[in-house]
Structure formats: structure tokens, C-alpha cells
Length: 176
Ligand code: SF4
Image (cartoon, rainbow, N blue to C red):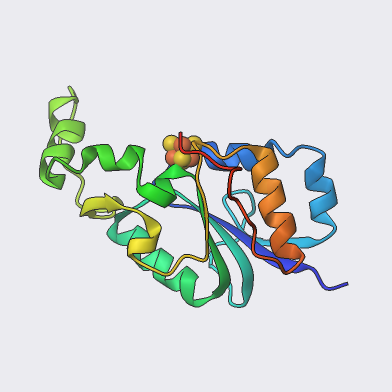
């Protein structure tokens, strides 16, 4: 049986949604027989590949790099899943939205620093004016709220998608 090509992506999130995915524990072994993890923070693959069946996206779109990344991912993915409240609503990252990016950078790199305070001009991708949910940049096929979504929920969403069904999450999900 051909394995489904699965990816997971970490944009502006805390990694909690990926930790919840790992909390599937032994259920991961069952999934492992059916999937090939082709890109993820959990594997050493630098370039997002072509022809990905399902991509789980954690985190909001907060920087120019996030925006470029999610557009490329969308163009190479059949089913895009917003995983967790940060991806679905921008949640925690959006707490900075009332402030301008310059004020945030000044606070982080100047006001809270005692040695060599300076705003980096390389290696740190420029911030967008606001952190936004994924679906405001690209089309999202499945929304899985939760902070984080439970391991069981992530497992059932993946199982449904692997069976070729659209997960019916009515009554199963909650924000926060
Ligand atoms: S939804 Fe919650 S657990 Fe997931 S990345 Fe955001 S803050 Fe972390």
C-alpha cells in the first residue's frame, strides 16, 4: 500500500501543537505504517517537497518568512489543515497586534537587553504589521481548534483524512 505523504509545519507557534501530535504515543506506530513524514520539525528535511497529501500547520502567519513559506506549502499540498488556535485565529501571536512591529523589536532587543543592545538586521525575518490566521493568507481545508488540540483529536483527524473522508468535528472541538 502506498503511504500518504504527510508534512507538519511550525509557523508562529509555541510547538505545543506538535507536542500534542507526539502525545499520540503508541498510536503513532499505527500511523507510521500508513504515512511517510516528508517534512516536519521532527525530521531533517530542509526543503518543503512537492506532492504532499496532507500538511498540518501550527502557528499564525507573523513574518515575511511565514507568508512566503505558507504560500509555497499551499501550492504543494492537497489538504491543508490549520492545527490549533494560533493557526485558526492567530490566538497568542495576535496579542502583539495592537503594537507596531518597531515597538516590539525595540522592547525585545533594546529595552530588555543590557549587553550589545541592537535590533538585528539579518537572520531575523521582518515582522508583518499583524499576526494573522493562516486562512487569511491561503485557502485552508480543515480547521482544528484547541490550544493545543488533544492528541486524540489530531489522531482522529489524520485517520479520517487517510480514509479519504473530511473530518466532521462538530461537537468535538473547542477553542483554548
Ligand atoms: S495553539 Fe496553543 S499550543 Fe498550539 S502553538 Fe498556539 S499557543 Fe502553542
